[in-house]
Image 1 (spheres, helix red, strand yellow):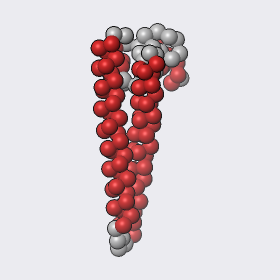
Image 2: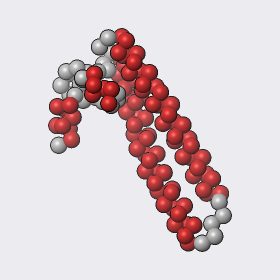
Image 3: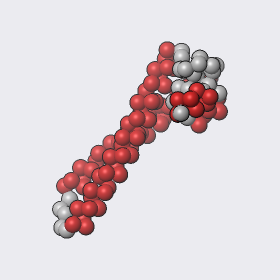
Image 4: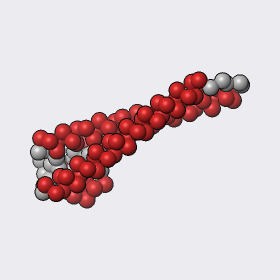
Length: 114
């Protein structure tokens, strides 16, 4: 992979990482605010409980994506980025544009999903 392409994906990954960190910190702040609210009835409790559950699921998904991004950045640093972790074939540019933290080519991804 060309240096310009690596720099392109590194920038995308770093920008996404910053956005996820902001999202996670915002969710924590929101949960803290919800925890300090005075809840007057069962409806309020149910609403807060539902919000906490949804925020928790979203935070877990974003934490997983953050871990994937960190691994992709490490692969850039080690020179392994853009190569399928299973078969060693170069991952297509278009696939990386869609999912810059991909570690498998499309064929191997299908195998892993099965």
